[in-house]
Length: 367
Ligand SMILES: [Zn+2]
Image 1 (tube, rainbow, N blue to C red):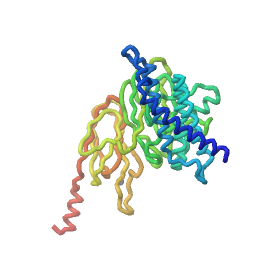
Image 2 (image 1 turned 180 degrees about the vertical axis):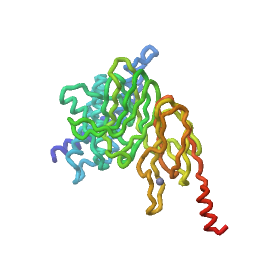
Image 3 (image 1 turned 45 degrees about the vertical axis):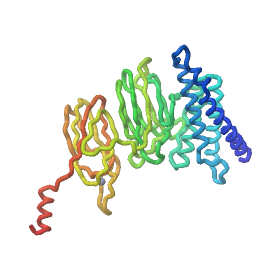
Image 4 (image 1 turned 30 degrees about the horizontal axis):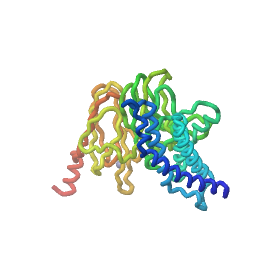
C-alpha cells in the first residue's frame, strides 16, 4: 500500500506540473496559430485544438478532486481508479505531443471512466464497469465516443457505444438531451451492466429517428427498478454513412418550467412548481403513440396516499390530433414522450370544486 501511495503522490505532483505546462501551452500563441493554415482550419487541426482544451480541463478537474489518496480509510479500488485517472491524463498529454488524436481520445476516455467510477463509489452508487478497458484486453475494437466537454458525447450511427453514466447530480435522475441526424433510427437506452461478460440489463428505453432533438428523463431508483450504470447507444442496422448523434447530460434542475401553458415538439422533460392540484391537458398532433408521465413532488399529508410517488403514466394515446386531460397533484415532474415531429401543447388548469364538493362545503357551512 505504501509503495502504491508513494507512487500516486508522485504522480500527483507530476500532474500539477503537467497541468501548468498544458495550461501555458494552450494559452501560447504558436499552439493556437498552428491550427490556422492558409486562412483555413483543417478538420484535424480543429480537433487537435479542441482536444488540447479537453485535456487541460481534465487536468483542472483532477487537481480539484476532493478525493484524498492519503486518507486512512481509502479503498484500494478507489486508489487504483485515482491512479488510472492520473496515468491516463499523463498519457493523453504525451499523445497530444505526438498529435495522435485516436490515442488522446482513448486516454481521455480511460481517465473519464476512472473518474466516473471514483464518483459513483464516493456516492454509494453502482460502479460502472470499464467496458472499454475490458474490450481492449480482449483485443476487440474500443467503443469510445468523442467527448469535447464533461457530460457531452458524440458518435456515429455506424456503430454501438456503451458509455459509463457521469451523473450531473449523483443519486438523482438526470436529463439526456439527444440530437441525431441521418437515416434510420438509434436507441438511446440506459442500462445496468452487472458484470464484465454479462448482457446489459435495459433500465430505460428511448429511440430517435431521422433528424431531430429530444430530451429524455434518465431515470434512476426509485423511478426505475435498477440504477443504470451506462448509456447504450445502438443504431438499427449498422449501415455506413447513416449520420451522427450527440448526447448531453443535464441535471434535473434544467427541466423546462411549465407554468400555465407550454408548446413543444417530440420528447421533453418539464417541471410544474405550483402545489395546487390541477388538470393537465395535452393537445398533440401525431399519428404515432405518445405518453405523458408524472412524478409527484408535493408533500402530502400523513396517511394521504399518492399514485405518483414514482414516475408513472398520466395520459397516453395513439390517434391523430388527440386532446386529453387528467387530474394531477400539482408540484412535480412531467415527461412527454412522442416521436419527432409531433407538436404538442400542455396546459395546466386550476381544479375547480366539483358539484358534490361544493354542496358538501355548503352543508358544512349551513347555507
Ligand atoms: Zn401526489
